[in-house]
Length: 170
Ligand code: APR
Image 1 (cartoon, rainbow, N blue to C red):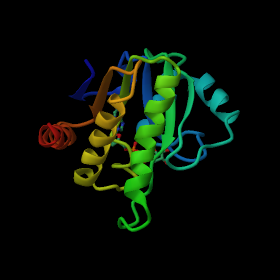
Image 2 (tube, rainbow, N blue to C red; image 1 turned 120 degrees about the vertical axis):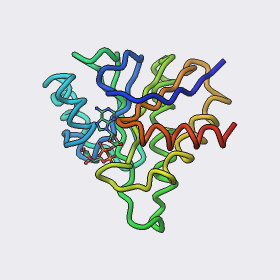
Image 3 (cartoon, protein in one colour; image 1 turned 90 degrees about the horizontal axis):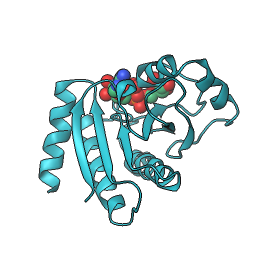
């Protein structure tokens, strides 16, 4: 029985098989959740990321979790919001799908996502939440390993948007 949970918290503290990093295409760290994950994982994470030669928007790459409680970090650059007519919705869907596909490939049972692209990349939260949840729910129809997905929101306000979007889905 696969489940989606919406919680408020700090994703660097989450004990899941994999946590997802809202990265940029360089994969060399940044601010926001990217900065928090790199700080918590330690410098070995950046050393491994340097060998990955970046990542295209919507694609995903996996590394070890190092000092994080999570075994893996899945790095995905979400789209930067340019008004919604530059394929942003499709690219955001790809970020969630490709992260889940990698988690499945690595035999992960539990995966935790931040709210990808809705911070620095300015993707409107009310548009991002349904895209994220629909993509996760559709993935569950074919997944064998991934059974539990958490959306880890950094504030109660963000959690409420995802919780409302999830309620509308069911
Ligand atoms: N745990 C969970 N969520 C967090 C954390 C954390 N420790 N820190 C920040 N967030 C939330 C933000 O509040 C926001 O809701 O993650 C969401 C995504 O925001 P950003 O981190 O700004 O990511 P994004 O909008 O995808 O922009 C990515 O920002 O940090 C840089 O290197 C990153 O260039 C990339 C860009």
